[in-house]
Length: 311
Image (tube, rainbow, N blue to C red; front, side, top):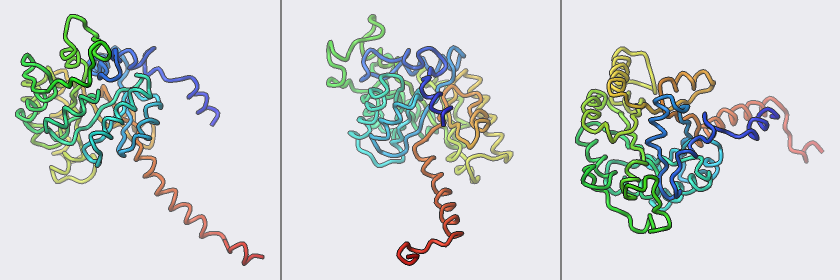
């Protein structure tokens, strides 16, 4: 316990003197320079980014997660029932409570233009699930970017970046809209065998605006009729090899989970990735199932008569 307390009091530099604080925007209402951070991690200029997964729609949990020392906090809007207001509050909780030391990533609920805009307007980067085709990727990029130069169809939020207050730019030669285009990251999830086969075409067409790719192994294996999160089946290892070779061909950063019961497990899962998610609010709660079972078994082994019966 003393060693844990000592490690916590020494702080967390996230692989550099400032961690992602070096990539924060002039206003925490804006997204961090997550695109640059992911690319710098991929190029070896900084250590891989380490993230925390928030699977419960809870602003209090987001407030705590923001202070744990992770580079980013992933807020899951795909598999939780939360309002736009709750999602926005959680994004702000992450970025303000961490004082810019963590940035928010929102996994949006789908490909619809509105959800992508809501998450980006909140100041987050986005993780987009179930990207199977070039057409879907083009729509996602268009929904996430401002201006015809980027083929963007995102609507400018006039009440988000207030003139002279929260619209200060990193690059003063460009508009706030082009600055934000260059700040927020777009990470796509490849979660079917079809998507793996289409990834080369997706990155050929949209790679300049896709900052990282995430292999959703559970959904991909389900789509292939395979059990579990991972495996050694030939069709699976062939699919993973194609996925990895496609990323290498396009020099594209990889993101993904690095969960496990040991440090070695986590390091093995993190290999080759520029952004890894290694912590979660849900995982420790799942571990309590084993604690409950053990406690039941321990109590059965003893005579626990009520105190009044003993007297």
